[in-house]
Image 1 (cartoon, rainbow, N blue to C red):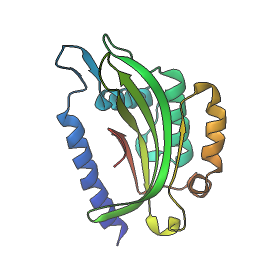
Image 2 (cartoon, one colour):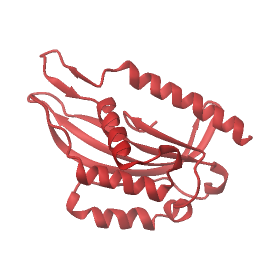
Image 3 (cartoon, rainbow, N blue to C red):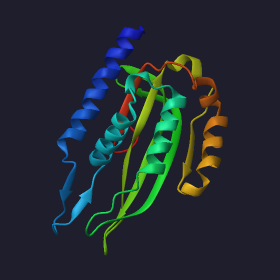
Image 4 (cartoon, rainbow, N blue to C red):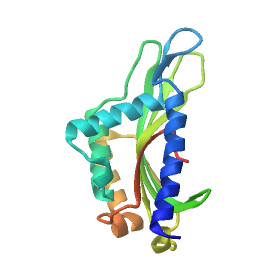
Length: 187
């Protein structure tokens, strides 16, 4: 499949993801009137952080993406709102093959997962982060991989895990086919 066709398919999938996120308000109130932290709100915070840092999303390499996400995690605390508290804040690094409709790619993602707790209710998880899409043929031998860090004190060990992963070593400076800032979790 030509890069143009793959790029067009990724663009259509990106528009679909964006439309789904735009349909949900950033921060809404639940049935009791309490504010709820949303993935869309987190995504907007990440985009604002990237603007402040002068990061051009379409120019991100895997190495630059990891640095941006780690800085966002280090320097921006998980939001706490009245009636809802962020009880967990973690980074989730994940990669593997991906296919949706006419598009296939190798996805490399670093997402922030915030767990929100309301009294007497189930915890909910909110995600926001960056996903890079690469030509899938060169990464066929790489097995899917996931690593999670929920301790800001051990972020250096987490960075070593990322940097020593086979996909990162292979793709750290490679140009991705597409870059997505996403919320809501992995697709």
